[in-house]
Length: 415
Image (cartoon, rainbow, N blue to C red):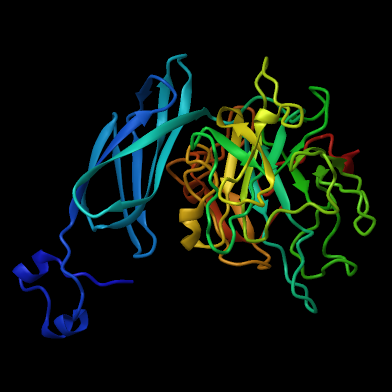
C-alpha cells in the first residue's frame, strides 16, 4: 500500500523526523471532491431518502461512502486514484412499485475534482433469495481437490407461500486468471449472460415453499462424508431437495428431484458433469413474467458471444428485470474490477480467497435493536437483501444445509 503526504500534515508539523524519513519519496496528495450524478435507465424514478454511494480503491485500500437523497451528491476528501463506484438504494418507479436500485462505474479514474455519472437500473425485490452457497469445495486427505459437494440454498423471504415451479437457476462464466472482462454487444446492465441455465420442475404448485422454509439444490445429492467420496467434506447433501443430475455412472441419480437443463452453450446437451467454478462465479435465479416468452434455443436473438474472445462460447441473454436474486463470488478482492454481474443484480461480491477450503457463504438475517432475528407473522425469518453481496453475506463459514430454515414438507426424506 502506498504512503501519502497530505498538505495539512506539513502545514501543522504533524510528522516527526522519523516519519519524514519513512515517507521519503511518498507523493504529496491533495484530497479532492467527487460529484456523483445519477442517470435513470428505466424511466422516471422517485429516489429514496437513503441512497448509498461507495467508492473503493482496492489496490490502495481506500474506502469512502455517503448516504444521500435525490439524484446528486458530493463526496469530500477523496484521494485521487482508480475507483470502483457503486450506488444502491430504493426508489418508486412510474407504476408505483418499489424497486431495488443500483448502478456502478468500474475502474473510474479520479485524479481531480470531477463529476461521475452513474447509470441506474432497478429490479423488483425478490421473494426468493439465496440463503447459503457452498462452491469452493473441500480437500481430501490423500488428494488435491473435491468439488462434488457444492450446493445452493434458496429461501422464501416473504410471509406468503412461494412456488419453485418454473423458477430458473443460472450461472455466468468465470472470469479467467488474467481478469479479462467479457465484452458484450448489448447495453451494459440490461442483461445477465448465462453460461448454463436450469429450471425447477413442476406444473405450477407442486413445490411450495412456506414462510420459514428453503430448498437445497446440490451438485450431487449424496452424503459426501462417506469413504467412497470425501470423509473430510463438511456436508451431507443426501437430504437436498434437488440435484443437477447429469446421468454420470460414477455419480448416479439420487432420490432428490432432478433439475431440468434448459441451456448449455446454445444447446440443451447434457454435460458429463455440472459444477460452478470453485473460485466463484455469478449465480442467479429468475422467473419469466406472465405473458413473456424466454427461449434462447428457439430465439437466437437471446444468444450472444463474448466479443473479446474469438473462441467464445455462446451465452444466453437473461433480462435483468427477470431476476429474483443474484450473488457474485470472485477469486479474491483484486478481481472486483472483473465482476461479471451488473450492479443492479449485485453491487457487491463475496470471496473465499482460494479453493478447496471447506467453507462457504451464508446470508445475514434482519435483526431488531437487540440483535434478535426478526420473525414475520407467519413464522418466517427475514433475510437481509440490499442487492449487495458484500453487505448481505458472511463469508468463510462452515456450510450448513437449512441453517436458518426448515425443509419443505415434500422433501423426500420426510415422506
